[in-house]
Length: 388
Ligand SMILES: [Zn+2]
Image 1 (cartoon, rainbow, N blue to C red):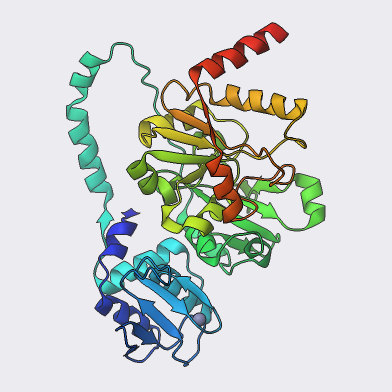
Image 2 (image 1 turned 180 degrees about the vertical axis):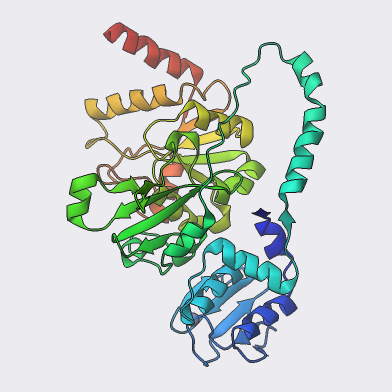
């Protein structure tokens, strides 16, 4: 089942919000002079009236509307889904982001769902036109994006969903950790990263070890193993984070391509629902990923923001790295605008992602993005042939 996040959240009225917050134990809200609602702080389990709700956008305060702000312990802004997660956490209950969204929809009677039946109907409708397409496309490449097998959602209940200090200190907000359903697995001391596909199906779970000895033994990021079974999937058959940012990407026809899951969360921490980042989870852009970008997300621009893998920007090492990147994007360049984010100064440490050093640095790098043309691709390919 696919919950329509935007339909649910955008339909919430002030009355719906009151229903939700009072459900978690706040008394009926007071109002401030602007008519904003003031609740008791159910976000951190206190009776104090420090939880404000700004329904309308407020430019002075930088709120986009429908935003809570806790002026006490949390000292943080968040939306209603995050509020539900926090209020549950106070009661000792773990909730994933999707379960919290579902709760919001159910309590307010606004559960906008696209059921499997409807999706099937839609598919049939599209299939009706297939013969026309067949006439049009002679021998067009018809290989589709492979569908990966689904993992049971119940596995997610095994984990603990409190934000982990290590990641909060790494330019990742609490809201981003919730949105990407980041959990913690005490048994192995791992941070848990669920991977979902474009239809929101759970297709893999990766764990990031925190103990140095584990990292040395098996590596930092590995597929999670539960009861002897590896919850792995082909990383190259998906774009990590596509379930979170696909609507934004489709509406602006632009995507930022990162290497790691962490980069997606950092980007979300800076831009919230305006984030248009997805991750390859590797340093290559596979054919499937290219198809997802071009055919499914319909990107007209792809900004490739891979990790900095050179020490000095004005070195042969940097030149080699640049040529490598150009070869990696060669398959995209004929179909859309492709830009590279490169660090000409020393803003990023060696091996760092463009998202690692905060929003300001990322914006500076974005200002300096360079466009890769077909001529440039041809030049690099020709040169590398010569070298051989
Ligand atoms: Zn609070």
